[in-house]
Length: 257
Picture 1 (cartoon, rainbow, N blue to C red):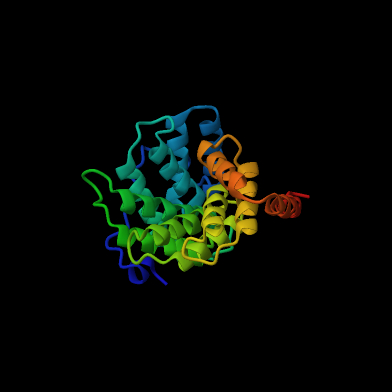
Picture 2 (picture 1 turned 60 degrees about the vertical axis):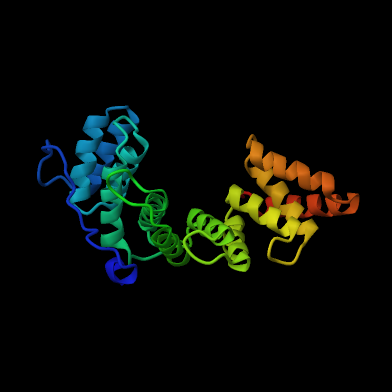
């Protein structure tokens, strides 16, 4: 399945502009990537970009993704969302149909999530805001790659009616899938809609359970803390005890062995 057919994306294949390489043409993509990675860790950004670009042109997906993240975050360079968009678009176009459980899947999935965010919010002079397309990209990453961030963002789009119909049941489904993977914001939002009964059957115990898990997983977040405190204050003593016990059991089972 090519992404251009599946998601109606036009002209995603883009050329990667790279500096003049100082590498022997016979250098492997893996060795170039390792060189770029170590240069990046040392703060030698220009050297890292050169090495990563060389590896990317030899088909190293992680190198291409790392270049996109560098420009997206302005990590050692001027932030350049337009350039990051082009790089992530290339990843999406070339690797969309790769093994969703393969070693490169997380890089491809993250590229889809990044592109969805760009389509949702737009890039001045480059990409117009298009929430319908953003939802499609989140859906692809959420369904094909089972990406927890995509599942969370898709759930929120369904919950708020962005990019299509508002559907609380679909929102709950995607939020739950993301929450099960440990995504703290999804856990908090799923807990909130369960506790309040937003479009789904209300379950105060399970709602408080998920809010408690989110608080434990993401301590220091004021919004999650506030949601938990409000639900805790509104719950009965019995519901609190039951929810705490369920949360502790979930956390114990999900913690690394």
